[in-house]
Image (tube, rainbow, N blue to C red; front, side, top):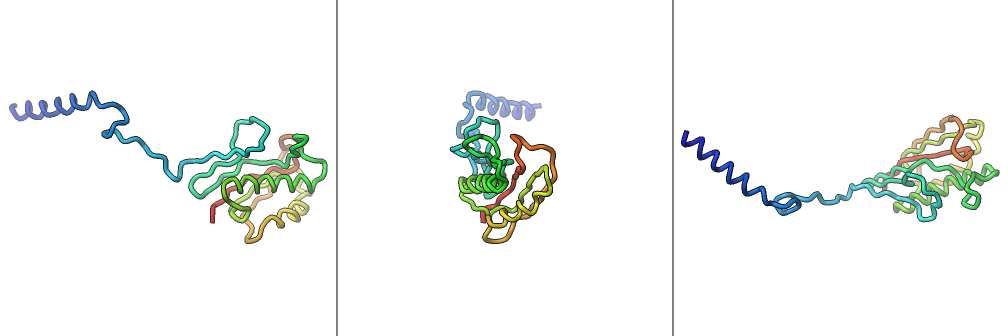
Length: 160
């Protein structure tokens, strides 16, 4: 019985000693930001206030949001197909640059297109944006795209 009382006494003293310890003190470690904490990238020239980031960088991996080739003057895809493709790929390139990467850091790309007959034309321009190996890619037939776009692309890049 005496032993039980001694143990209870010790527990009461320990409990009483922790009551006044403020949160965040030396005895309660505060989590520190890590190199893998997500960095949300929103391009500085983006004019819309839509609820998404252009990309999220976690460690050496960049997750790129879907992008459409929008003419900055009109806010719509241009009538010329080639210009739309260049605007799309230049937008991806700008997002990668903001994260300190290049097109050659892309490891996976998904392209959505409502008209699969545009596949060859897209490839003709797409291939000129890479110096090294091409990333894995899917060219996916889709329904209508936002703002009347003919292509939307998203991807994943890993810093080399």
